[in-house]
Structures are given as structure tokens and as C-alpha cells.
Image (tube, rainbow, N blue to C red; front, side, top):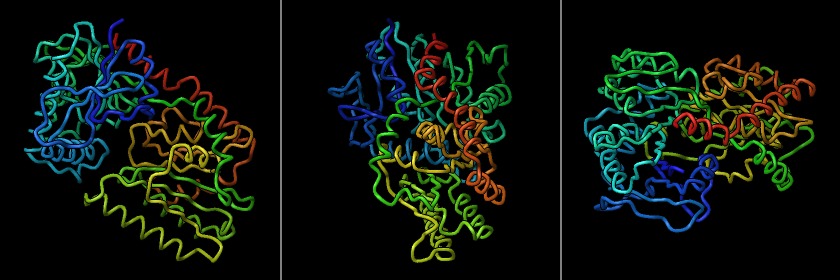
Length: 448
């Protein structure tokens, strides 16, 4: 069986690596004697041009190193300050610098050289996310003919937005070096195919094929998923371990769990909850919002600004509506273990998954999987999350419309048990049928 080689910017470390992507790829990696390659996340002075093995673990792993300058210009610069805002609809936050793009190309070129040194003729290569878009192009330049697939975990921007880049056309040529490009949602596939034609000058053929020069690449939708059954079992166990006071008979719980990022729509969510409380005094002391937002890129102005905004909004709403026995918003700015999150999802009556733009958003799927099927909670889901295409039984909202969100909160809280069960049953059936193993198998089968 051909070996599978996966590459991502960061590698899952530790003797027992965890995370959604690990669950998705572990079987394929172990069955094929495969290999996962990525950086450790810790810059080193004078990195060597060789992959370093990681000891132990259920599958083989190797590390490439980044210098402090590469980490600053390739990772923090091009990837996080140019491509991330572009792919999430925030071209106004892009920090375009020639040294960022040069470092981005240089790091991908160096990774390609290191990979070629260990590559076998029949290896299949699966590249993950926007940090490594040029990798297949660099591998082809080195004579690699192996099957190479790429999966983008973020949204794909419109052709118009891509024109904000100095090298939008070049990105299309980079993508054409792959055999298969996988995207989260149909909207992303439409955008990518349109970009290949409008920016890259390519031709769209039947079956999602884009032809650019001598290259043909298939571009298709592969919505990422979770292990719904595993998460359901975890939530059942962890619910009983929650500290006293989380679940109260006379108080409903709404929950939001998002990394602290401007794409997640948390300020709009807080404003909508404040609007809800302004409208419905009868719900005072009978509902609270638990918002968990672990830090991401502290010291970056855009992230410092959103943290300050959230703290101001939470303080203002609590100051206006709280009493000595009730705080409307509990805002936690630190990470919470996955196990506790599973229990909290099961305890919650409503989940607010309201990003302004998101590739998929697995919180929506985890919340549904965690519910008690006999008394499930309600999912409020942004139309701009990729998950909305798969989860029409959620209450779909526009996160920019504060009044609509406030109205939908009341709809969710007042929904009958019968309707909640019907909606949850349909959502859960979709999660079980299209789980994380279905996702990885579908992509690898299409890669061939």
C-alpha cells in the first residue's frame, strides 16, 4: 500500500497526539506506514535543512525547523497577517509586505527540498492549509510526479477579494500544481473555480476540473467533520463531572466557544444578547451566556483590540443588567479542556455559533453531538459558517443583523421539546453518516 505523507504548518506533538485532524488521519497513517511532517512551533537559530524524527506515538512524525525571522515573516507575516484576513473577508486588515511573500515562498521551497530527500515514488502527499499553498508547485519544480492533494481549512475568497493580493494570479498557478484541491463548502469551491478562470486565465471543465496550461486540477468540496459517536459518549461522561452551580433548574444556559479572533463575531453576539435582555426583562435572572474565548495572537493589534472590545461589552452589559445573584455574561479568556467543553455543551440549552466568516466551525457539530437526544439544546448558526450548508435544521442567522440574532435567541429559548428533538435528530443523523472518517476516506479516495 502506498505510503501517505501529510504536511501541516504545525505537527501534533506528545506521545499521544490528539485533535480532530489526528482522529481523521491516524488510521490512514498507521495503515500505510505513513508520516506526518510539520514544524514544532518553536523557532530555532540556524535551522538545518533536514527533517528531524519525533520519537514514539501511534504514527511516524518528522519536524522541520523555522528560524526566528522565518517565523516572523512566513508565519506571523504572510500566513497570519495577509492570507488569514484575506480568506476571512477582512482585506482591510491585510499587511502586505514584499519580505513576507519572499519568506513564504522560501520556506515552502525549503520544505519541498527536505521532503524530496525522503520521498518514495509511490507516496501520496496530502498538504493542509494556507501556510503551504506553494508546496506542490515547488515539488513539481524538483521533478516530483507523485499524487498531491491539498485541503484548505479556511474559506476560499472571491476572485474580487483575491485581487487585493499582489500575486493573486500566482496562487492560482500554485493550486494548479495539485491533483486535487479540497474545500470546506460549495461556496468555496465556486470561488476557487472562478478564481482559476478569472485570475489565472484557466478553463473550467466538467466535474470541477480546472485546466491551466499543461496542468489539470480537480477542485471539490469535502466538508470536514468530527467523530460524533465518540464525542457523544465523552459528553455523557463529562456532564456528570461538571462543578456544582453550572446547571440550575431556574436558569437557562447559552454557550459560545471561539478562539479570540475577529472572524468569530463575538462582539456582535454580545450586542445581540444585550439587545435580547433590553427587550425581555422577564428573562432576567433566567438565562446567562457563557463565552469561552482562549487567546490566540496576543501582542497583535487587531487581536488586542477585539479583546478590549469584548471586555468592555461584557462589563457594560453586566453593569446594566446584573444583580447580586446573577451575571448575564460569564466571559472566560483562557483555554478550557476538551473534556470539560463536552460536558458544558451537554449542559447548555443554546449554542451561539455566529462567525462572520468560517471554513466549517466544528463547535457547531460538537454541540449537536453532545446533546441529550431526549432533551436537546438548540443550535443558532451563522449563514457564513461552512457548517450551515450541512446543518439546515439549525436556526440560521445573519451575524451582522443584531435584531435578528436577538429575536432568534428568544425563538431558541422558547422552542418546544418536540421541535428541539426533531431538529436534533436530523442534525445528529447527518453527523453520524458524515463523520470524520467519511471525510478523510472521501478525500483520499478522490486523490487516488
